[in-house]
Amino acid sequence: MKQKFYNLEITTNGHKLYEFTDSTLAWINKFDLRNGIINLSIQHTSASIIIQENADPDVQKDLIKYFDKLAPMNTSLYSHTTEGKDDMPAHIKAALTNNQISLSLKDGALLLGTWQGIFLFEHRIQTQKRTIIHHFIGE
Amino acid sequence: MKQKFYNLEITTNGHKLYEFTDSTLAWINKFDLRNGIINLSIQHTSASIIIQENADPDVQKDLIKYFDKLAPMNTSLYSHTTEGKDDMPAHIKAALTNNQISLSLKDGALLLGTWQGIFLFEHRIQTQKRTIIHHFIGE
Amino acid sequence: MKQKFYNLEITTNGHKLYEFTDSTLAWINKFDLRNGIINLSIQHTSASIIIQENADPDVQKDLIKYFDKLAPMNTSLYSHTTEGKDDMPAHIKAALTNNQISLSLKDGALLLGTWQGIFLFEHRIQTQKRTIIHHFIGE
Image (tube, rainbow over all chains, first blue to last red; front, top):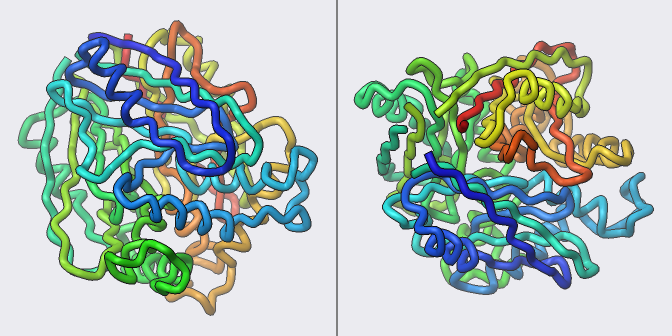
């Protein structure tokens, strides 16, 4: 059994999606990982990980707009408001999406569909430094 | 360590839930998988995987109706509309549910609760051919 | 390869969040688990597992209130009503959050962020006995 860990750091500037598929692939290639699970976990509760279409950029715009409507940045709706109007909506959006995703790797290939990309979904407005742990377990 | 891969193909005809628990169980039995994780990942961004009650069929009907209301098929709400009125709602519904689920297997038994079934949640209206990768890692 | 299973039982009394990070940590320490994945899966479809902020308790209050508004306990909205006004909303809330989460363990440390806690998110009003399976795979 082989295990390998890697902390991917992404600096964000605003609530939108940041694709990092290429960073994950580069890490897989660098260490010649072949078969196993790559467990991704974000170390924050106001940002998430999602797998989404990486073809038409309008999909990302619509997603951001949709989630903003679903969890409005309106302090009158929440009790937890001291960290800013975007903080409680950020926790909600994180709860509605994913903190963690497990990817499968076969013969060195990441098993994603043709149009699938892996994204950090930032929910805060201000610049943030985010860590996404990559953990490989396999052979 | 033992690893095993299997591509389950499901042809859908409309936005609803398709249970595939039996296909997963048949694959476990066929290869006598005993202890480990089965990572399921769907290779599409307009359909998802969910674990839900498989007893009362009304639960599925209510889920479909609820998600249709939460992400309406109304092109005036979205920018990404070229692939049909159901496409952007499909991406949203996929973001709100799961692309991937890891199941635990102990002594050959899939650790699901009494009323739990594994479903493909199709979000597109037209017929689609969907692939759900099954990846076993364990012993 | 080492595998280990543990059923954590939690008795709930109302639809709210129940943190169980300490129980997971105690189990890790007891069996000196070092490196691997811990797959958590809840054996029910009307409660979920989420990772959320465990600092300000207002975050939990806001989350509960938000999900109650998103999936109202109003039987006129649903067909599946025989198990109580809270049952169908519970299935919906479970679909919107997680049945399963995989955690990474490195050198005996659970890789969670500073403010992250692991919670059972109960969606039923009446007292329930819930089982969250812990499954370690690693070394």
